[in-house]
Length: 92
Image (cartoon, rainbow, N blue to C red; front, side, top):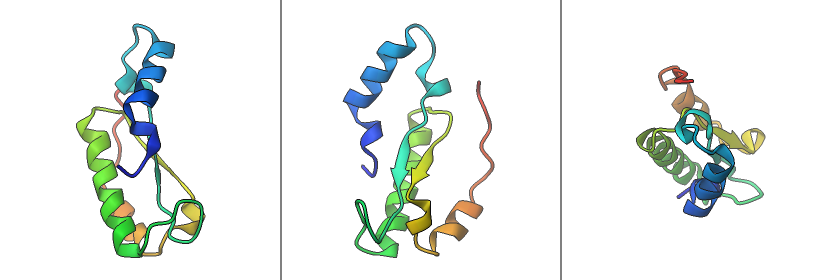
């Protein structure tokens, strides 16, 4: 998985804080898109593949959205991928 914030421990800890509210309406996993520092992917191709997988996993798990860190270090190839996504629809 691309992001540590979708691990069971992270989600379980967040569920405790949310109580009876629907976690899918409020929890927004954060993914990594850097190829130069922090926790870099090996290539732009690897970054794009992981980003697609991350977005699919977020949608499959029913979370209302997602974000990325290190956007300033993302490969230029990422932008067309993100621009081609349908607009997010809030379920809140």
